[in-house]
Image (cartoon, rainbow, N blue to C red; front, side, top):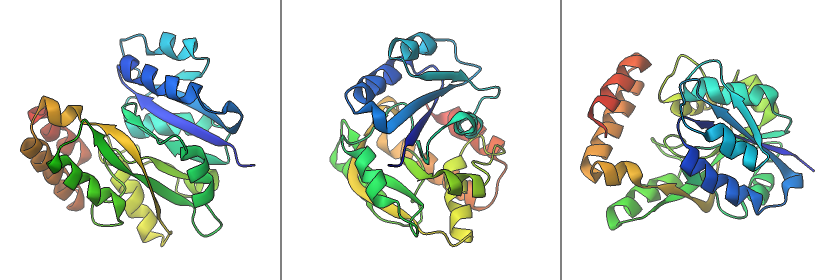
Length: 230
């Protein structure tokens, strides 16, 4: 039976990680391990929260999701790796969903998602996550893959301080690897849209994506993106 390593990069996410760990606590723990890879720049009590739920906590030597996810994968014991953000809640059946989705031919995939709280406009955004298109595989989508594929792809590229998920998918396509999308949707926090606006976030997302497409320096993309985001 495949064993899944769930790797979550965090940066001052103690509140969200508590909700997520409570969710994992309700599942059959014989099927998976949870590794929290915290940023060295975090200043909250994420470590204490993780210890309360008896999960694995590490402090990444370098900040950034790519570095933190790679560091989590370095100590992971699973045959399958699953990477998700601290404010994303998987569906209850996601362990079984992943095991069914991965076969010899299908070694990588992600979950479609919905927003909470949601609106008509956010429902439109969420529909784009159900299909393999131009924007597929980035943002808040849960990546899962065989450990063998992760190693074959040399993990996430740590040159990307942003858009590391899009880069990973771009390299997968170049290597002609199959991608599967699980339609049993994860739930993503809409806090970014609540704290800003639907139009503003979407314009910033488009800006970041097209800068990435034209191979703009990731540091420049990140600087511009967060300059305007609350």
